[in-house]
Length: 198
Ligand SMILES: N[C@@H](CCC(=O)N[C@@H](CS)C(=O)NCC(=O)O)C(=O)O
Image 1 (cartoon, rainbow, N blue to C red):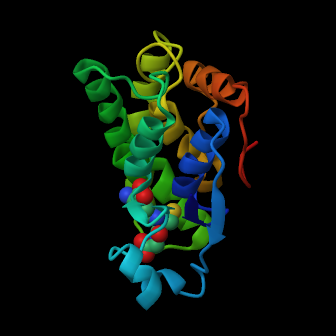
Image 2 (cartoon, rainbow, N blue to C red):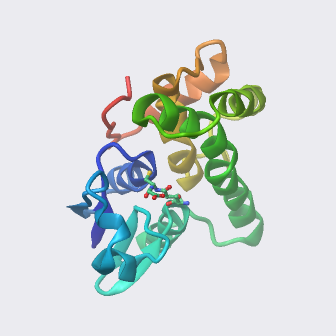
């Protein structure tokens, strides 16, 4: 399976992290994002949205990091990462949505401003982060893992941009339960990091 990837992308890292934790080999194909490769013909045929990550599983193409996590966890076969029951799936998808929206508009966009100079409103990203982090801290003060009381793809989706929050000037250290959850993720067998994660 090929993953169209960039080492500095937290969205791509969600997939690399899950693959490492679940023992799934991936062939990484580096996309020259700085050179605009993701906005040109061959790549746009894979993902008309012009974004990484994209997974190519023997010609079956999946775009969006959350969708790729669901696809790979299903393909993995056992129910550790993605359960068969509707209630469990809904709980996980709720957290995938938080990763795709609240984490994106908060810590992830703050990092886009500070690390990559993206023209976004920094105070808006800080306000979004300030709203999000106490919610996550309260959740992790009652739960070891995001969903189902075990590591799932929900943890893989949430972890990257929270662990990279400092690169956007967002301080997670006052949120002890959140930090302890991040340490639990980093202690999982097979864990891999990415540039910027301490
Ligand atoms: N919802 C998508 C967002 C993907 C995304 O924003 N990828 C970034 C790299 S981290 C990208 O390709 N940005 C280029 C662009 O949007 O033009 C996902 O979760 O995969």
